[in-house]
Length: 74
Image (tube, rainbow, N blue to C red; front, side, top):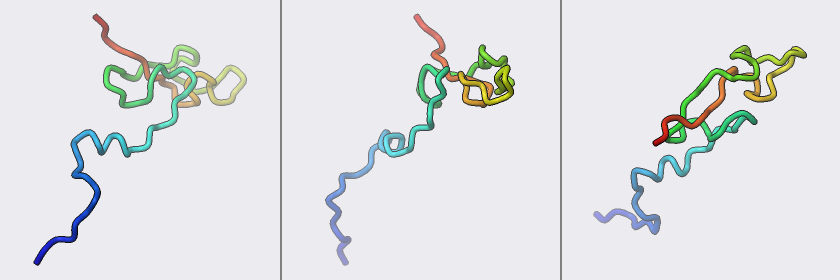
């Protein structure tokens, strides 16, 4: 018995990441979460509370208390 032929090329390891939706970025993020060479840091605007001085969500981290920033260098 033969298998049905697909016109879709076989998946490569990087294909899974290309189809995964990108999480939304907060204004204080330097890159989307999970980007190689980045990491999470306590939001410098709210000190990690996720709240603004006015009581709403922090505008820099969108209420998460952390921002994604580039790490390393060299």
